[in-house]
Length: 164
Image (cartoon, rainbow, N blue to C red; front, top):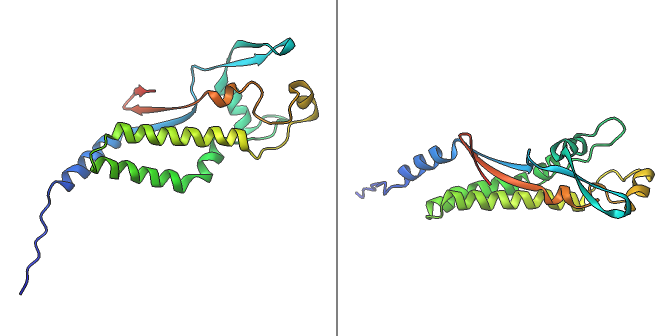
């Protein structure tokens, strides 16, 4: 009679190590707290303000008063959740193959960042009001100077330490 023996060549150790390495990791994608808003001035010039860009992003994301919700963060995540989960599996597989978890996490952060930026450009969103179109000279929601889209970044956080 044949006998099959299962010998662990280190996979269990790798899995335990990965669980420990990734258990305290969060990838935050969006407008980071330190970013400030820019405004288009008279004659089309762009100037910096002291207003946090995260506040403007939140108003667009959730709506406020008469301003409609134009979700670019939640909807980008929700629409791409299967792909994001697949990339999470890729992180584990990459680590097993010897690629660093930092590299794999950076890849995931970059991909999700790109998804959010694409959502800002492609929408679809509730159209701008006639007054906004007149002021911006554009009917494209969320895009005026391009600053919001360019400010979408990811940050990898581990136990309170940040990695941009």
